[in-house]
Length: 277
Image 1 (cartoon, rainbow, N blue to C red):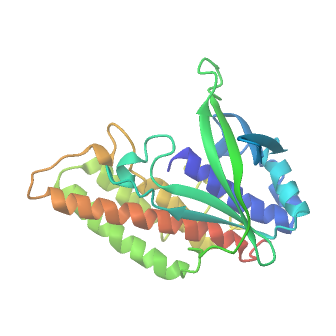
Image 2: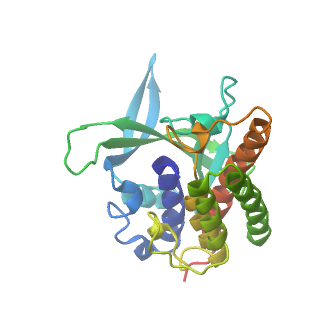
């Protein structure tokens, strides 16, 4: 999955761990894989003064953000996803672009109210030899709002079965079109759904920790990493077929993309269920 999404997953999982027991986030920043190419990750409160907005610093790194939220009596973090609503192209076709693919937020829940945070990624020094070229800023875009209609109430076991069915269908389609590399990815994702963590071979293996997430959530996120085939040139989005086959491809692709987003949200938000050990 795109690093910007994976980073939201990481902040949600480790943030919930920190809010329960601060020591569980030890070593999280900057060592987590989702910060590998980030020069900085900072948090701001936009404040309007007269006719302009001023970005007031809130935290200079993710761990300071966790602590700031704790002091504000935030007890739970939850991810949320919503479609962009753009008419010119499906979100799955735009996800390879910075800021494309829909809208992702983190909801910081207090007692009867929520604040909402959104990220902005900006390229910094492209010449850095360590490739840490991204400057990431998170903004508190809303304060003291009612809790959102969250997407984390799905049964993870049922969601896993639905995911397996979707992966089976799109794998069969990929094989029928001789797209063997993609078929292998879909098959690998299906295998993750029934295999036990840890998964040291995965890029974001540090998200898949059973002391922070239920076992099924780890399996779901591992499967998402393999099944996330959406992007730019050479990706699943970059395929074209006979007009008779194209509608099937479009339907399967849209179904997988929407399901992946549901799975990511549900799995990450399961970190708020009090499973920390």
